[in-house]
Image (cartoon, rainbow over all chains, first blue to last red; front, side, top):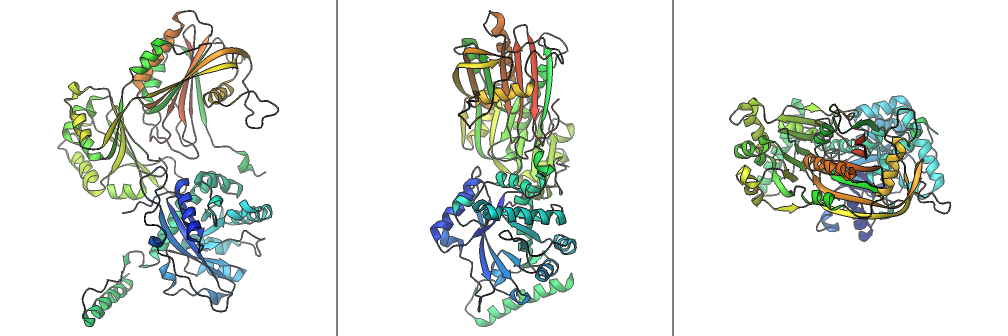
Length: 275
Length: 361
């Protein structure tokens, strides 16, 4: 069993087609002490025909994953999809979303924010950091999201890149902290280059500037991220208890394959009905 | 500025002033209860080179072993338990494990086994433990303390069997360990060497570094300070200066330098030369106590300086600081103590810990 406990995680490393850059970012993250990173594929829904990207297989990037500094285990690489939504129709969970370990939504309007907090099946809700928050955070949706186990994400690299963005990041996050009281927040990088990554204890200190308390800031890089990853895993299971996996086709006869798939699907249905 | 930003992480400093020859002074207990030490640094003003007697004591420090991937249940097997662990003077600490991230194991010389484990491991182990005192909103770390000298844990008893089964079958915990035992091979029947030879291990000696400090200001300390008398500098400034000296940070506070604004505290005097000596390794309290005795004897002959200082640092990733007080790591995990020894056998003892720590004794 892979131990996932309270280790530091960075759940937002931007995907780039440049393999070398991506490899460098992941190696830097391992060197800094992160035990898990998630490669983020952004889906801009405003295009005419948004194509849902397919997550790159990890073996394409690394034959051998870099080892986390100070430990003997290699870094864990997950995949994450972020849907930038300006309209409720933009977020349509389907089988392609299931290919990702984590699903996030970036709501741009107040109505969408409310819907994302209360109903959408997501793990992470992104908070604007590059401009002033267009709407205020209301207590009801924020608490609803926290109760459901959805976390709010604050990205820190825009604050590193530009001082105006730094003001927006701090302003928006202070607004969020007033409403959520420091619960349900994760901090991640959104890094596009290896130099934009910072060590986990530094980010825990940065969390103090964003309005989190010491303990909350450390949790935002470790235990809260663990909760997000576990939530992501339960999305593919029935009530977090039973998981079905497609069996690889064992024998040539077509009728046997159909029967085994049927058995699995009915087992999952039965499990859902029993609980 | 928001009020949270002005607060620093909480840290504790306990100061004690007494004399080595007084019967009631408990300095020996404080030294012996701080089990896991990784560094001792000695600062002697007006001393050009390490005295041979002190070098001799350091050379006689106990060696320690580093074993890789040792399953913990092997240290609890009957023969090893009876011949080594229960006899006392057996120290073991897991290596390359972070106290706030991984499972950490420690064997105390009093015959206790401490397992500081995360929630998932604790739920799978099935042993009785207490939630960590340093939890935030949810409990994510548990500390299992097992007294191996207890009659209920004798080999053959139900609780002992359960412990072995947990560590052998349910959650086979394997880790790199640092082991130090005062017992020789004849005393324990070669059991320790037998066990170590089954795994990949190395024997290490504590490493010694010496550095001569030249022409620098150093605080003048007087042992007869009473509370409020203010002849010497206060402990915080003194410890800060000591830290700057051992890290080779300049305390000149020159106007042209922006790197360091540390300053030697007043009252100060200029010392022509001084000695900074550092010993690193897996150091046990008995060795540190003999070093302290030797340092007390330094003043048997007349010397230029009236004080010398010895600082002992504990492992930041150890599950305990003094005795069985739980130790944790928030932003830093310092737990150290510092002796300032004077010519007349007076001493000052400063014990400091960080945020996730109990108060030093």
